[in-house]
Length: 238
Image 1 (cartoon, rainbow, N blue to C red):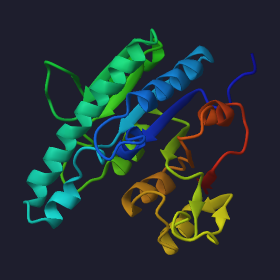
Image 2: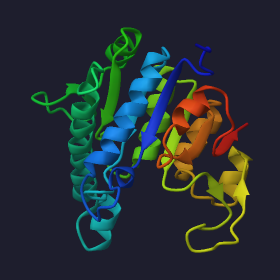
Image 3: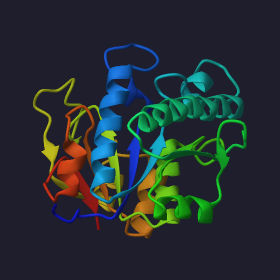
């Protein structure tokens, strides 16, 4: 078996990635497909951390837009990520993957508290870890949590799974003439206000030279192809 291009990765999944054909909640077939791909990665010897969002259940900024207190709304969104994390954990463990959910908000009955050294040790022991509850702070997105956790655990790259196959100059769903970028610099993303990740997350990656690959999670086998060195999606780097 060929040696994977990256030894330790952080996979960022939006809550919407779990929707599948549903308009709310979780599509079990989608979750099972993601779990199968994670199993393939694990068999390659890759150390895997996942950060999950909650857009399929509750998004704090949308709650705030409807008049909810922003801090309260963000905490509700963080708690929703724990629901998604537990769902992923169940699917992973059904594939015989030893998995730990690590929450930035303490809820010891269902998840471990975030301790960086413990998280790294789990990876070294071959366990898959799922980071839930974002950074544990309101006003910060799960994209920022992905950048922060990626740097803390020494990930070599962030793989951001989305509904589209890379970064475009406009929404490819609305504009059939949208142009896809093969590679982008961090500065280009910030200057052009491209919706790769929020500006805080991109700036953190830029300051610490942590590359990002944006790809379609909907296409089966994409993550394995990336780890095998294929050019998939859009690479954001120095």
